[in-house]
Length: 128
Image 1 (cartoon, rainbow, N blue to C red):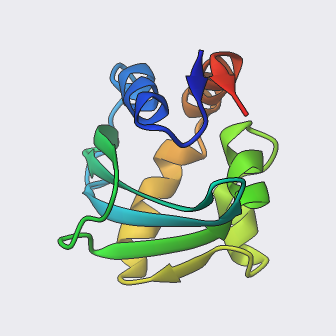
Image 2: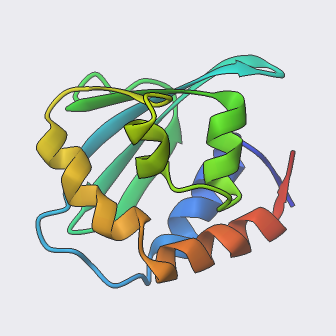
């Protein structure tokens, strides 16, 4: 079991997504800020290359093209597969700064059934 939003959780998330089908053009660096968590705010960054997460790590990435801010409850709901991140974005509950083309390019990855299956496996191995 790994703790939610820990480096071990980031590593497991990346490992579970390694074999997902790629999505050509879905590449870029994303900075994520999760606010209001039990331990305060958490920052992590992710790098996608052709639709695969090749890096997920705690901390800041000054080279990230896109910055995403969300609350802990919304982040938790996405991680558990209870809601798609694009729905939260459309509701204004996820704030995005940076080129929307990158975000739109990642939607086929994060909205796919194989990715949702990964989230279910991740959730089963995560403590909250």
